[in-house]
Length: 103
Image (cartoon, rainbow, N blue to C red; front, side, top):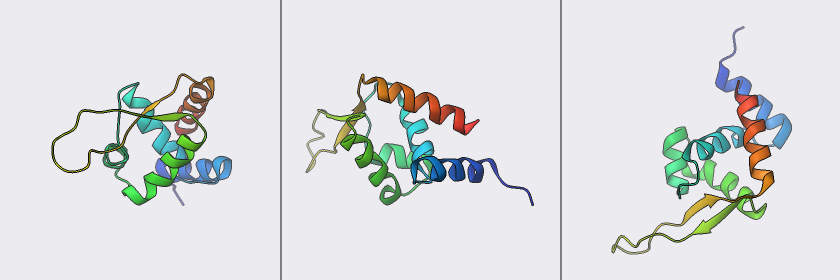
């Protein structure tokens, strides 16, 4: 039985972080660099639904690895909630680990 790379990555993510999508989401955020992003941006980049990405993002915000940032208002209703990575060493270490797990 052959397993796809995505399945192996999700198994590793689930084993280490108790969330099968954390590695995938962290890697998508890391590709963004320090540019602000929304949950929807990451969901689109990973082809995951917002409802799958949102708990991972919330967990990273609660851990102070991501932080809210301001954005320009679009002038149409409520503006989206933008986030960015922090300068915490924990983010650097998590990013490095997730990249290795995806190999």
